[in-house]
Image (cartoon, rainbow, N blue to C red; front, side, top):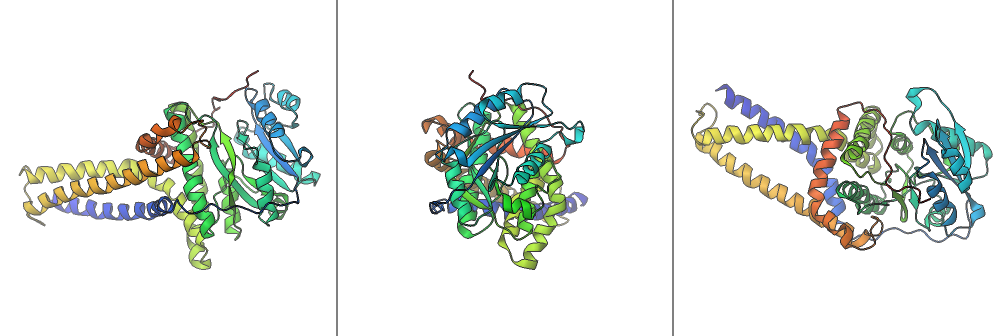
Length: 437
């Protein structure tokens, strides 16, 4: 009968979908299973580079002074070797005034074009200005709400003096224990640092440099003609461009950038929608180059980047195809098993009944195993080992996050999926960590 043929066709499609999902999932399984590998460290260098911290800021009066003071006053690095630049981007508040009073070098950037109202353009402006000064060796991009570990400058300098021009830190949290949403975002950001980034560094694959703390040498920026990005996902785009040139980024695990994580469902959705939408736009132009570049050059960094970022395209399969198919699958098999639907054109009723029970037990086994590995084991290890980087003073403040991680996976996948299927507008972020004065 036609419904048997339809079931067979949809089942074959689902097998293909499972294979597509399975390949990038294997990378995550690999990273978690080898979480015990020793982190990489860099030899201490007596030679000190000059560092320019660059902060694009649009109406960030609530947090900018605290961020500037944190960088200027809390580094175990000679103060004469680093400065903080704040690009006040189309500001209508006291961002520029407060940043200057806190000790920053302030650049005013006014661009009336609505299409340019994103971090990319003030970053370009600031980097161009710093390169013209010809006084600095490194440029570190920070967001207006970022704080950094006291050893950040020293550790980035050590890696730079080893000859590395493109670096990323560990992404931690300022407010991880605050609530469900901050814990969810904290765990995801830290997961890639503790597992993915450490493993990439150990096996010689390029780090994924994105977000606050991204560190670039001025010699690299001069060679590439500046900050050569055009998309809303400018940080990931810059990383893609460098990897496609055959360059390799490195991970400095003990250098930590602490971010203010979104604390509401709305802010979580808005952030992840931007990630999903921006990532898809970027991947449409870069993804095939990564995939075919691997077979052309044999560079593992290409395939690892491809399989990691392909997750953005996979989220609609996870959030739409998978639920709809298995609702249909169980409904069809149940109706066949109890005799409501007559079969026999392709297979017998007994066959479909066997398939039903095999599917049930298979899903229990696979999902149960994944939940134990991804939902609990990786999260508990992360909390026990890195709780201070997650913004907690004591392990128990984040311990429940280990057990709630499956729920975080659901929130993350759904919100990223929404972004891949939409064109979200840039919205102001509600800051949780604000000025005390």
